[in-house]
Amino acid sequence: MNNIFLKYFKSNYIFNIIAGVLLIGIFIVYVTFETAKKDIISINHKGNLEYIDNVTQNIAKDIKIHLQDNFYHKLKNDPKLIKELEQKLRYFVTKRYRYIYVVDKSPIDNKEYRFLLDGATDIEEKSLFEESFIPLNKQKWEQIYKTKKPIFFEHKDIKSLWMTYLKPIIVDDKVEAIIVIDFSLNEHNLIISSLSNLKELFDISVLFIVLVFFTIVIFAYLDRKREKQKDDLYKKLQEKTKELYKESKKVNDLNKNLEHRVAKEVQNNREKDRQLLHQSRLAQMGEMISMIAHQWRQPLAAISSTSSAINIKAQLGTTTDQFLIENTENISQYTNHLSDTIDDFRNFFKSNKEIQQTSFSELINSVKGIIKISIDNKKIELIEELNCDDKFQTYSNEIKQVILNLIKNAEDILVDKKIKDPYIKIETSKEDDTLLLKVSDNGGGIPLDIIDKIFDPYFSTKTKKDGTGLGLYMSKTIIEDHCGGELLVDNNKNGAIFTIKLKGKSYV
Image (cartoon, rainbow, N blue to C red; front, side, top):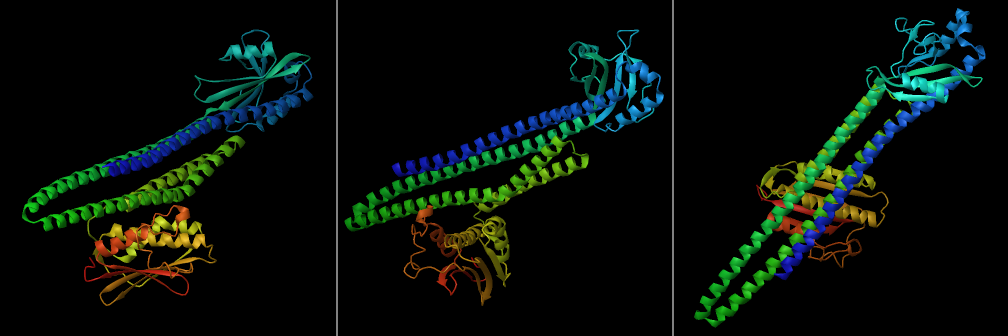
């Protein structure tokens, strides 16, 4: 009873650590995204103001060259000069900086202002010289004459404009005129819309990860419940055995002692098998998390790179609608890839005890989807010589776990020994009514003094890497006890070679 409690405590402790790290990671990424979103908007805002401040300084200098004082009278008497200066203003008009014009306060009506220069490119929108107007936010305009410093303010009620920038032209410590630049709302709305779309994609990704987390929690709960049911059933079996033992005691003392020893051995063997299966499950969970990390690293890096590209473009003011659309679509594709990866691993490791029709080619392709990135990252060549595509019936998920274990063991050997030009070779063939699958490598082989022990439980050559010694033992149990085949090992001139044999018409 104490051993069972200790086993459940360790399992829950490990799972809670994994779950906690997952949730903390989601929170950190989410906070980072929100901060980056605010920074993009702030940088775009600040970059616009810095650029416009430089533009207005150049415009003011240019105007002062031609107009030392009394701008209005000089421009009124020289229409040619008006055209020349307005042409210079048009150089700075863009889709972002929609209107650029120069005004001063009307001496007739202190509430009104009048146009001196207008850089509008559209004749219908262009204002004439001396044309008067009353600004909507008059207090901001009046503030220029008091402070003699540039100001900007956002528009809340004008649909086409985002912000207005006012720059005073100072002559003899007096505001002679004001340079006005109106910012278009279109690009600002585009940036806000694109960030909102990214936020939606990110929220969907976070929601999916949370759903995966709770799915794992549910499966872990069901697994613990199933184990408890097994223990309860085993307790009932023990009680029944005790009853039978008491009855047999009346018949023969010899039978009583024999049954007692049998029951004790059965209990020890079942406890041993249960512990082995439990440790194997923990090892598989560790492998799964490691492989998910490998699969997710590239798309997460791509998402980070794409977000940085948008950030830089926004700071430089060179973003386009097509650029933002293409990059947000790329982020959506990367997110879908993350989702597909979760589905692949969930299907691969779920407990499926049903017999299914399959082939070695199908099993190998499924395993490749899990292990390929890890092998490629370590620059290991995967050689395939698939000469048998016969269909057979078996427990496909268990066979896949055996193939995966053999490939991972070969990968570890090649990396540990730093083999030059490493490779893993997978071969399939058929001999009479026997199907064969071989996994070999050029890692130097298994020492002869331990080759007979590698299928023993708890025997491992990876003690420095937390090897459990259960992988090959469970693989042999699956092939020989569950699937009625054979799992053999031998050395060739280059390294170790493991052979899976399935016999009979159904191979089950």
